[in-house]
Image 1 (tube, one colour):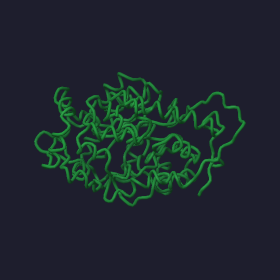
Image 2 (cartoon, helix red, strand yellow):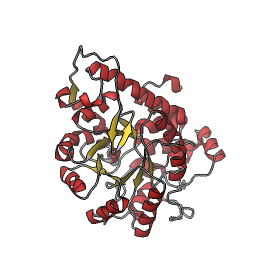
Image 3 (spheres, one colour):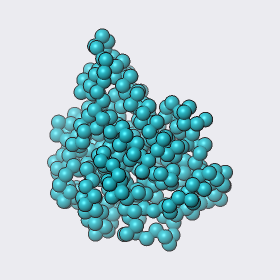
Image 4 (tube, helix red, strand yellow):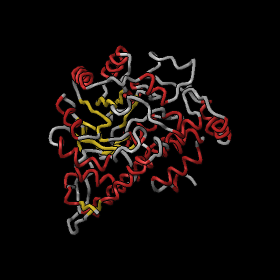
Length: 381
């Protein structure tokens, strides 16, 4: 199987599983506890059906949207995710270039492996910074100022990760940064030597957003350990309000799942929220993002932009979320599998397939613009 034979999410997932060591694949693929929420995120889209209209004259389709003040050529964006150069040596460079090609925005994580500044200089497309709130308030202020200096378009504060989720696949393999693998984990790396050669022969692995502030050379730090040890569980609404004032721009909370929290975000000056459960990687048993979307759009959709991520594998999933009222839809694993499998070429193919699906599905729905989608297009089963 090669990239040309990848036609959907599941094909990219299979190719990634073949090409990267097991511990890395499991880090991308896995979720918390029984992974119930992870599975439900996608299943939720099957709880309603699309109702198409015909004979509407759909010769051409406009997929553009405006979200968080950004004009996007696609209603789908690449959500910020951590550690991308572990999956493929191109990492965030590949994702940013693919997003720029398709005219959509991409995100860089506090745990990103390429610097904010490098990506900002390389691409004019809209750029998100995913911010984690640390116990060290000086670090928080320095990171916020750095993002301002780099002219980041959207500050996205992750609020559902004040402690680490119980990701049991990573515990079994010993996945950590730097690697401190169990014997089983080491054996899985040994059978994928191609990945190891590329990892060794390219620039050393770094966390440039954090390296001036946190010394990770001395001992291994698991990702769960980073969340638990470094991040501040005492973060509250007053802290966020202060950040919003200091940023004085597009400010989004990622990980909002209740209408009450969405209303509070609007009250303190946030310009957007992402309805998200972190891909099922934090609180297992949490409600699916799509299941909560309508409730939250009804609560605040006329005041702030509501985005959504979680479980998106198809263009029809995107259309359902947009019909409910999401301004744009984030994808994570959807581009991480092709990144791991084939770098920039993989991400470009995945976004190209998504664009083609959306254009085809919009025509079949009888819509020529995203704004024509509404809940009239949907029926609950």
